[in-house]
Image (cartoon, rainbow, N blue to C red):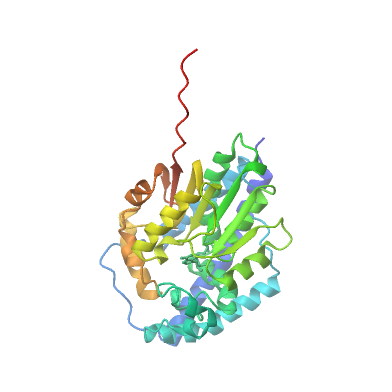
Length: 355
Ligand SMILES: C[S@@+](CC[C@H](N)C(=O)[O-])C[C@H]1O[C@@H](n2cnc3c(N)ncnc32)[C@H](O)[C@@H]1O
């Protein structure tokens, strides 16, 4: 039965959310100009207009609402925070801006080295991604990350992540969720896992990340919901047995990895997946996915510390997944993201002679 009320609630909630983050996005831009943004990067490639971006975002929100109407998964609804706590985080985001801009002006991405955990982590990781204070390692960064990302994407980060729920719903069709294990690789602050948990209360869920602070924020964000196994580890060396998960997801991770680590992580994902298992990848668009937007993608690493993004933009993801034994299933480009669904081959069935 069509869930029209759910769809209406989803659209209303998303419209309010969009309005709020759009306002924050403009305000942050204005404040950045006030503080001295520094020279603007002039991309060589074409850049979408604001109205093109907004139209694409509206398409994303509509597709999410239609999935709710069709009963594929529940509305986004509850995001486990209070307005006051949210406002406090917005306030901290603005307070953090001068420091981040000053690091950007000096091209200094090393505030993370003040965090004791940095010494034991790989050098490619121990950097201030996006010029965040404390990189991925400080408690403050874990508390600011989501409001920063949603402000950047005008409230579309959550809906882009939710595009990964559709292939999961299709995988689950005809299966008992109690017998399905899902692993979110680089789960960060657990925003996607909360959506998965709301849709599948009985599924076995695991969230893996290298940042203890982000895992702690994720644990709090999942709060009262049924427990998830949190794993503090590197995605290129996951402490999980071979063929132990049915679905692996990874959202906004690969563009932050050096090319060789991207391949190691892909092989690890293929290793831990069961035969017939599904990998759902969601990350930034690449060059050529929406050719008229290439200039926007090119400019991203000039605004935020993203040391591996340029290489990611033209990395051969198809070939990388194929080489690891993850065969193409489906590819899409919701708003600013690229969704790739890949399947690990089934084990060959033992031959039985015809009766
Ligand atoms: C851009 S955030 C994305 C987080 C989350 N998936 C989301 O949707 O917001 C990247 C995350 O990847 C984690 N990360 C980066 N490299 C990693 C690695 N090699 N192993 C595990 N986690 C990693 C970071 O700690 C951070 O939480």
